[in-house]
Length: 250
Length: 250
DNA sequence: CGCTCGGTTGAAGGAGGTCAACTCCGGTGG
DNA sequence: CCACCGGAGTTGACCTCCTTCAACCGAGCG
Image 1 (tube, chains in turn blue, red, yellow, purple):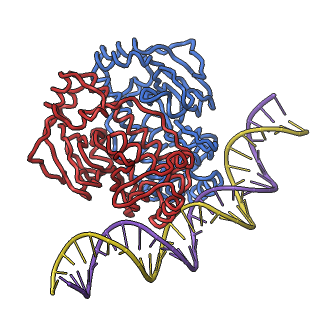
Image 2 (cartoon, rainbow over the protein chains, first blue to last red):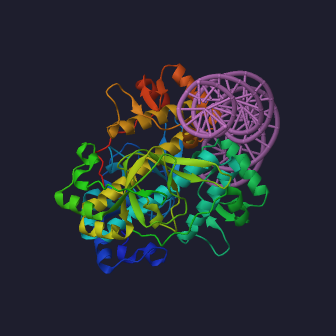
Image 3 (cartoon, rainbow over the protein chains, first blue to last red):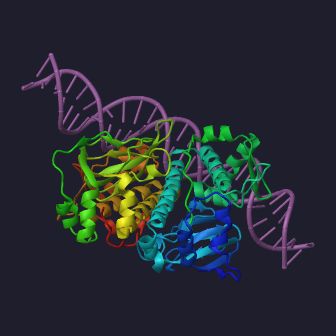
């Protein structure tokens, strides 16, 4: 884990995510357990790889603040971004399935993460079945997102893929309360990231994104994004995600 | 659910999958619960769509025998195969996350499925935390496979994608004991399926597959597949999946 | 003030898509 | 028994979307 243990630990009782109202409620007992489950808090900076492919760290993490992404690299150096991570997203579970994590995690912004010891995951399932169910929910939800990306990369044109990615990221940022009153969201994703996520070359990503911006679909400036014609983007992308239940947070 | 309730129910106590040794062991108590959890057994034929996109059926299913695949269709009719399903694979969980299943399930062969009532899933987590953990395992494993597909479709050439798919399907079939002594496995996947799974056109899939066969990499005949140079295929595909722990079965 | 990083743009080439035709084979019905 | 049909596989010709290569710009920064 290429990250620093934070001097100031956020108490789960005062978790800023929980109080935001974006996540499902928990009982006091569950919150007690989550607090005891949390081993420590770590942070890192944009560009830090906090989990390397193949690495085993024996810890689960929840992203507490900031943006990150999950990726896999091929031997020729090409890398595929599997999905982007937002506050509340869990990572590190898959390393239990085989030997070492099949993917890496890199930060897009300065970020804080809550670390949980994998050893105690079993206690979680036994003592708090609801939380066990929530872990399943989070994994199933992440799979849903990867499914959507696969559909994009397999079946959509470059223009559709980019439209879809913009809409998707905007919506996810909005869900965790990142949208400003004026419609801007922070947007730490550069064109190389978009290209890696969509299976496109950097150059083609640039030209296509430029065209969408010229069409007045969106605006990206100063690491922020605003959608000007969200409905047209939805139609272009042929992307209509069903609304989700309130997501759990561990 | 476009499928028939089977007249002859397989008892979990005599589950042919369990006795095959390909799956992790369960305690007698867990097996009792699984038996009580199983609501009925259904079957269908090749080509049957047993779960439609958007449908809500309130049931989970485990594929008991046969092959199937999970897919998503776009409004232009293009469809992406997300992953192939083998005996022991669970499906139908995602419909809990939102309104209706975000994907469809179609059979590639005649198949039997065990149906479980989603309502009782909660009992499973509460009464048998280990089984709850197993459900998470299954979902996380499926996500792993979708991740691999996404890497393929996003970053690999057509030749690599096809090599990867052949190797992957061969290995999965082998894991559930479908490999014959002479090295053949049943192979109910046609070129259109491969194209839909890999984000390629049917024509290009055909030409590339033909070339690999001419290179002596593999042989497909009579709905069976045999790998002649598995090591070369692995290298071509740049695909080295880590071995998994013995998978759970519910 | 030069360097680097991210974005932008043009030109040329190639991997893969589209269109169209043909074969083979099993099923089916006259 | 055989003509017909539809599905799956095969192949060639052409085209286009996207990649690759290359160069340039502007902003931030040491």
